[in-house]
Length: 400
Image (cartoon, rainbow, N blue to C red):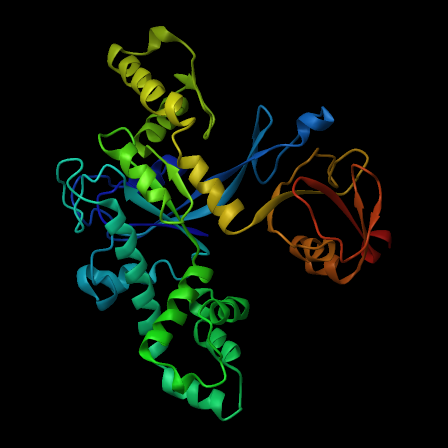
């Protein structure tokens, strides 16, 4: 799951609506979103159906003109204000909404037309780089607050030799979807040993927590409102932060998605262009708006950025790849004869046996070998899947 975060009034709910076509309250004042909105967006992948020249029959996803749209879960979190980690503006409640998020899309007002509290100001009046620093601090201090609650006991237990720090913290932070590997990586990043945590200084403790935040909740920036003045200059500065930065115009994406839903245009999320189906059904005002989207956003940036941000969150932050499980490697079908019925997003490093377990526990337990549908080569349990692999699992149960 990916969380959509940021301060109030930067376009988070518009981004969420554009990605999911869910109906959420959108207004120009702070705290429009009080409760989190959960919805289904899509990861856009090039389908393998064109490569094999077949008509596919997707079951868990959608294929449009060779573009496979794979469902993913998004959560639109309420806007955060300075000192949210202390509870200001219902901050602790809002932060709790992203506990299970695997990665974060930070929607930033690139035009600088909202101040640090989310109030509207003239474009260029606020520095969006301050928003990046602010959110980093809020998340880090929130993590620190949670870890401190049990830190003395954890530190003493580690130094008594009863358990190691990664194991104890993984148990303590399981509600934040933090794994042992995250903790080990954070210790390395902070250049700290986990053997004597009682000797850590306050700065060392916060350095570790900040590293843990970075590795367990990786984040990219959706530089929103790119159609407004000052946004382009600020985009260049945002890219200097070291984050993946995607130029966005969530309002444009929402307009295109709604127009496509009404069958006024042909548009697939993430496309660099759209096609008007029947100009007689489009009003002069709508035509003007579509022209502005084309010239100010699509022609300039190649897309509205919403789908690009979602794709980057899964492929670059979470290192996910797309694989196609089939039963018959010759016909590319499942048990019911459906062609390429399933496209799965799996973590990079997933093995053939891992995939078998993802499909069904019994399939994993009775795994014999896998078959690469392209080469017809047998693959062992330790074969590491590649992006766009088409894989058939052969198990003892299937043979019986």
